[in-house]
Every structure is written in structure tokens, then in C-alpha cells.
Length: 486
Image (cartoon, rainbow, N blue to C red):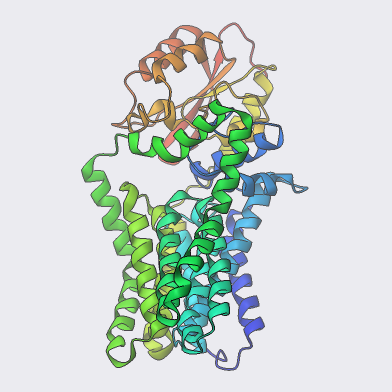
């Protein structure tokens, strides 16, 4: 990587931000990058219209994530582009923090910049092309961890006050991260315990008041949300608690074979970075500094969070990237062939993966246009399809459980706080003017809801549109008593 030895910090940061834009620009304006972020944007938009998460529109992610999407939607211009630009900014800033952290671990300047570049390259490889939750919360965790890497130096100087302030800032950032995705709690626990450990080494008597202060600051963002829902009444607080703390444990889960294949795929994609981290671990025999020990402990905490839910979707591995790439910077900067080979392999994987991604955005907009024209003021129902249909058509929602998986998949049966069959009957009894379904074939269709939908489509609806969507098709059905409006 030429000239990075003399590249000023500001120029390195600018380079990483430019690369973040370049790698993600192809998706700008695409409303269907991933089903999850489509739904997050929908929730954010409806919050601006007065909807309350977990009550008017349901999901199990923390409210901080929806506030980020609501903020993006509040900006002038296209809401889809807005959240994607915000996600790009977060990705670029996280890469800058990764580069700074790599320097703190002893990486050369070229290795630090390469670490930031690796973070940006591997984000889309693991499903982070758009606005998945870790794309946002990785920044807060990385900032907290970067502050934590200061502890050995502060302890060596016996700077008690600086350690306390450092811990306060780090725990605040970690606490915010928890309100973007709950699994950040494992990394937040590491942040807090690391500060307790290093403070105890310098002044044991200060540990108890320091730990209390840090704990209070860390839980403050969550406490603020709890108080807000409590002010709405006991039912609202119960809804928040169920969504954030109970529902995830009620999910039946996916077949073990499918989970194993996902995990194998993630390990394969991460293998170049894992190899770099292993090289960094070998070099610990020469000099395992306090900073490097903290970085490997952070990686372990992120790995616990990755494995906690156990479904192993690729984007669940995104929190591994900041510590992994930060550590990888050690090897990337010291072994030129490792730097070149790792980054080139990452780019090659990205190009190959991109070649197999279907461009279905036009079809999604066509579906939304037909839905908007034919809803006639009623609420269409997307049983299986893109929730971006609601966003693009600006139509009302027939159910608070508008994410299709909640009613369509056995992996959500009994986990969202409703009786799926009863909710399906209620939706169909309202006779939605338009229903969006799919030709997709899955082994996890919910047997309590799918027959109800199939019967309604057969008796009361007719197909008016079919468009390609990945390896299947999205199909739009219009109620038989309505004339189609093209």
C-alpha cells in the first residue's frame, strides 16, 4: 500500500470514507437490499407518523435502531437513500476507529489503513451492504473498545481520574450500542469489566464507586427507554419487555443442518481475517501487550454475542469485524504479501458475490406502484414479500405484525406474542384490497396460516402481477370485486 507510511491521519480517514462510499454506492436507492432493513425503515417512518414500536408496529429490536431510521427518514429527500447514506457514514467512521485501534495494537500505518479497508470490504460480504443493525452499533462498540485500549497506558501513569472519565465515555457508548442491538450487551460487559480490572490494579479502593458510576452510565440509555414506556402505562411497558427480553427465547429455531451450513459459510468468508488474527496471536509470544490482550478479549466477547442467538445468519457475524480487522492490522502491516493477498481476495469475493445478486429493485417498485393504485384507501397485506411495498406505496398496515416472517414462518410460531392463525383470520376478514404473496418454496411455512391465505386467494382474489424476486417470483393479487387500475 504505497505512501501510507507518510499518510496523515486526516488523509487516511478521508480515504476510508471515500472507499466506504465507493463500495456501497451501487446500492444507493435500492429499496430491497435486505428484508430486515426494509422493516426498520418502515418502523422509522411510521414512528414519525405517531406509531409506537412494540404496540402499533412490532419487532424485537431495541428502539434505538428505529430512532436512527426515523432520523434518516426525517431528513429531506428519499427515505431509502437517506438511511443508506447514514449507514455509509457509520461504516466509514467505524473503519476509521478500526484503523486507530490497529495503530494502538502496534500495527504500522499501512497495516492500520489496511485494517480499515478490510472492515469496509468484509461488511458487504457478511450482509452489511445496507443498514443492518451492526453497521450502526459497531461504531459505538468500536469507540468504546478504542477507549478501552487506552487503559494500560493510563494505568501505567496511575491516572485515576482519567481512567474514571475514560470508563464513563466507554460505558456510555456501549450503553447506546445495547439500544441499537441487544446482543451488544456481551461486548458492553467486557468494556465495563476491563475498566474495573485496570482500575483495581491502580487503586483497589476506587473500584466500587467507579464501577457503580460506570454501571449507571451504561444502563442510562436503556433506563431512559424503560421510563418512556412506563410513562405510557403498564401495558406499554409489558409490550416493551416482551419484545426486547422474552420473545427471542420463544423462537423455535431453524433446522440444525441449515444452521451448520450458515456457520460453515461464515467461517469460510472470515478465514482470511482469521488467518491474519492468528498471525497476530503468534506474535504475542514476542510481545503480548496489555492493549493486545484487551483486543483479543474483545474479540472473544463479540464471539459470545455472535453465538448467543444461535441462528447464525451471515449479518450476525458483523460484530466480529471490528476486533478481527483491528487485530489483523498487525499482520497486514508487517507482511506485505499478507496485506496484498488479503485485500485482493476480499475484493475478488466481493466482485463474485455481487455478480450473483439479482437486481430486483425495478420489480419491487412495480409491485409497490400496483399496490398503491389498487388499494383505494384500504390496507393491502404483504403476506410474503418486501415490506418496502408499504414504504413505497405509502399505504396503511393491516397488522402490527407487518414483517411477513411473523405470520408466515414456523420459526416465529408463538414467538411474537400473538396467535398467528387468529391474526391471519382477522386480517383476511377485513378483506384487504390487495395481497402480496410469493412462489417461494420453503420447508418452514407456518401450517396454521398458509392454508388460510391460500383459501382466501383461491376464492376471493385474482392474480394481476408477477415479477422476478431472486430465485422465485413476487405475485400481487387483487380482490375479485375490484377492477384493476394499471
